[in-house]
Structure formats: C-alpha cells, structure tokens
Image (cartoon, rainbow, N blue to C red; front, side):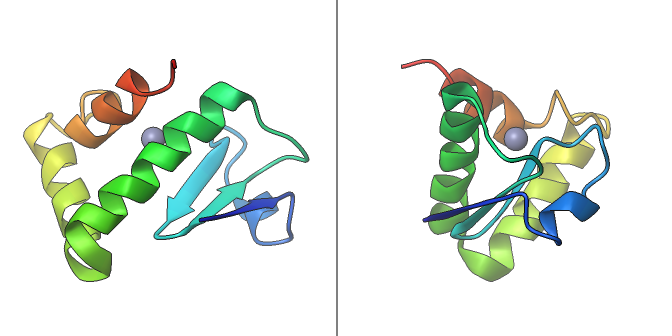
Length: 86
Ligand SMILES: [Zn+2]
C-alpha cells in the first residue's frame, strides 16, 4: 500500500473528493490526511485485494447501483466508514 500526497494527478480530483484508492495506491488530494481518512482508504485497499483489480470496480459499481446510486449508501463505503475508528 502506497500513500501519495498532493501529486499532480491527485490534485486533479474534484474539490469534494479528499482521496481515491486505486488498488494499492491511495491518492490524497492535499498535502496531508487525517488518520480517519487514511483508515477509510486503507479499508478500500483491502476491498481491492478481496475482489481483485478486475472485479473490484465492477463490484463497487454494483454496490453503488444497489444503493440507489448513492455514494454514502454503497456497501463498500459503509464498510470503509465502519473501519475509520480504531
Ligand atoms: Zn470511500
């Protein structure tokens, strides 16, 4: 798992996105991140590992659709939020 802060690519994220996880890489939009955000994104790394590079994006989209196209309601996001606290 690699955390990348404030790179040119990370700064392309929309302002409302603090971070994005792509497989083993956590891309943080700004120069720092809270431990809570890092734990959230680390959980997404585990989710990527469970499903693999091909299936995870599909599973994430299915979760999003099953949640009525809700980001917050997506099972993967709810699981990651549940792991934000130690
Ligand atoms: Zn998330």
